[in-house]
Length: 163
Image 1 (cartoon, rainbow, N blue to C red):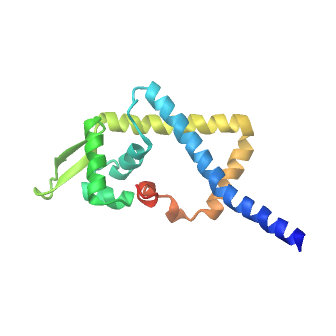
Image 2: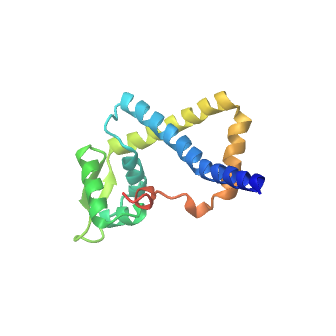
Image 3: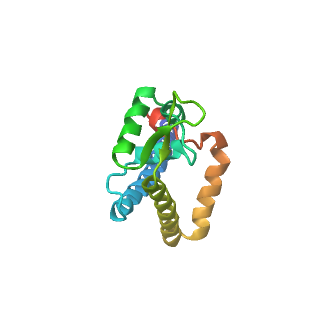
């Protein structure tokens, strides 16, 4: 009976440790990204800005659509868009199809931030491969692809996390 209880505790510890380690890996990569972005001319960029710029996309969308894509309220999306505009990452423009609507689109500075982010993430992946071995990193990615549904790869983390 005692052995059974120990095994239950071990399973509990292992169960909660996996998401914490996955989040820790995510956080480590994102924090390193932002150190590099700051050094490369984007000191005010924050993780939520990256999610929001991804939600805006190449063609631009309304602030309401940014909120839908992020999983946040229209008001929260509006505040995030306002901050991106203040930082020079985005701008509002007239919608060519509907004069009543404004489109939020990335500025050259916003596109530069995303391009640098992509390059830096490639560099960070390479540093993990150098430390762990390329095949091990590939194995981790393959394993995660096997258990993470394709529709889970979205930019709505701010809304999901309740921000």
